[in-house]
Image (cartoon, rainbow, N blue to C red; front, top):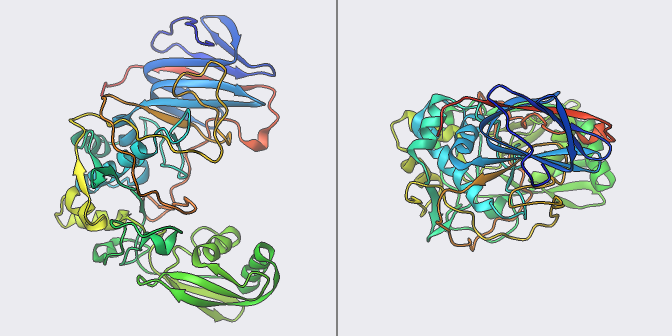
Length: 426
């Protein structure tokens, strides 16, 4: 506690951490202690709060910031990857799960160190991570059989993007986000994606609701919309707002605006045709997500067809190669500046962090080797929005909050508990 050992917890014993007005209060062994930071270490820890009951590996670091209780899990890479594979992919198909494991590990390794004191969120702003309780035999095997392997391009960590469904054709990175073309993120045909429930879809939304939302967002007296330009994969690049103060917007901006008022599954990708029926807009489209990199349903289709995880990755990331970190996790690439760095805890050692938004648990992986990958030259630009329904076409929901939400502020007392568990070692 506050950098010093406060005591030991036996297996099954619980420590209760409470956020108080002045800091943290920790109760275990019948006694209370107070401070600003608490770290609990163990092979596996059971973490419980009003909204969460999960098992995490490694260490949980608790910190007091303002009225909130913030938590960071210092997790070994492979248990982290196994959880992400199950949370993001979820299918019991080994080669597809292995492809997902490579991308999850590469995504984490590339972004490790980008923030001063934490690596990743636990929701789909980074990758969905629900702890070691959210694993399966397949996701665990996928992580362990690809242990330490990452996706590289010319010896550098690749941008490991993925999403739910391509609708039959992936997208160029520069057609989705601003920035230069990246050689391995080029649009390719994707016939294996036809197994996706969102391979083809048709939805509707009230025309007036859509136009009102666009008007609130972009101003003017918007009377309608018009598609101006499409990419070579038939995704909408730009649209005209008829009567809008802002004359043109991107297809992604249109999609976000519509979904904000009509629901996340109304415009599932920017690969759609638009028409009017009565008072409704009709969207007839294909795929779900941004379309850059690997389609998860396409990977599922390829795996079912007998293709290996290396075949799958070579299809979506042309010119890349899977490289091994000698059987161990690679260290993070050099840190890149963050536009909004987190506040450092008073006694912060590497890994402890104050999250910028107190709504999710952060993660930092624990490296197991001195292998260091070169800093990538190619840095993707864009919103960072990544929708990928992991199972049965349903959008992956962020992991339940492990800290009080902003809506609960100010907080007088928030109570969480941690209990060491006996679980299989990795």
